[in-house]
Length: 72
Image (cartoon, rainbow, N blue to C red):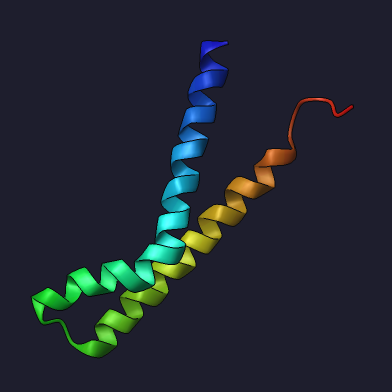
């Protein structure tokens, strides 16, 4: 039972991380990185990469949600 609780906790943390990458990556991450005077094209690529990784991680986590358990 403890293993199942740990897996649910890790899944929840990864889901929050995926949401941050999807929504916060292209906004807040770029805002923070602007302070380092990085070139604008690099900032755009980093924002797009954060968004893409967030979507892929979220899709991966959503795909595994249907496993196990019975529905009533």
